[in-house]
Length: 209
Figure: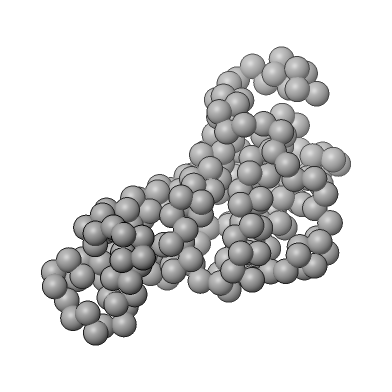
């Protein structure tokens, strides 16, 4: 079940490039520059200063890079036959926050085609996790861990699907073809973090089952 679902280096480079654009704006760069003009327009439309916009973008970048570190931990441990549910939970909710709280930057950095690709990859991962939970074919992942992974993914998956529909990266018909069923989260972020942090798995899972 475990496989690489991180972002390519060029995506991270794109974020750094955008930061540099904003910094040039603050240094009285040429407003005729198309990239700079776009950032100025965004600042004006939101009625915030370029300084505020730059600070917000830095927060976006920091959260994105932090999520990538958590993803790396999850993947590296997975290749060693270990699953770190807490890293997975925190990673997914950071990604969810990036999409929902930093939409203006998210759409400019990720672009429509990338959003479509990531949404489909997440759908594939969710369905794979659901099958593992149903059939128990991955002997390295305990039932309670699969439960945490599955419920965690519902949160991010809903957010990505909404984002894909919002920018027309995917249509309702295309989403329906995946037969996802009900992906309404049944467990809150706080509870998932708590479950991922506990070692009393047998007791916890029996309570949930």
